[in-house]
Image 1 (cartoon, rainbow, N blue to C red):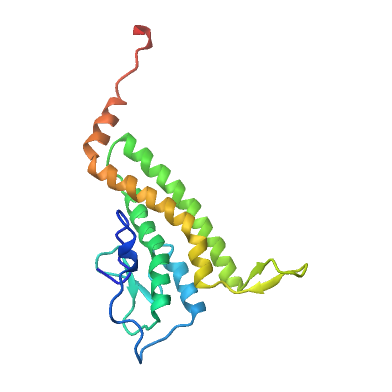
Image 2: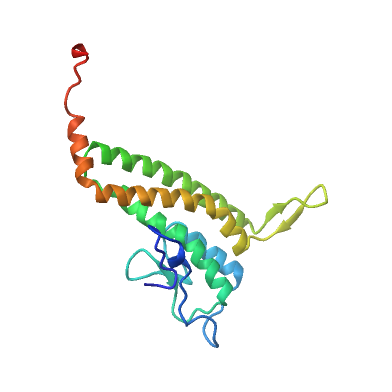
Length: 195
């Protein structure tokens, strides 16, 4: 399992698992701004410049030779959970198998993903724009750059929603027979005259 391999269908501890390869000398040390920009890709379930999808096709890790300190590594791990969940939900919602109930579930998940992508686009606009207006003492406010901590805070709500969708996916896979039998029930005509 990767450094950021999240056990997202259970506890959050897997998201914070660390390898002994953090820090050290040599290698590339990206700035916080570069990592924030890279995380915009990860949040969409895509590889970035410094973060890559691992062999399990779900979790993320720093690419070989990329060095960050322990605190940054932990924040990256927590933010990458959203990208991991996004990949899982997207992969499930794009499959075309199953009955009517499962198809409806997939459509609902696609709508949730669209809302999530709009949130990521808004974050990207903030990052690419280079600043966020903060409420300062002055009437105009001051400009602040988007930090890893701000990104972590902004992604907590969407991560929880994606976690719920991943839980539904796990239940749907586990109860696939229940989904298929309930969809076959929907093909029976309703006879209200017998009531």
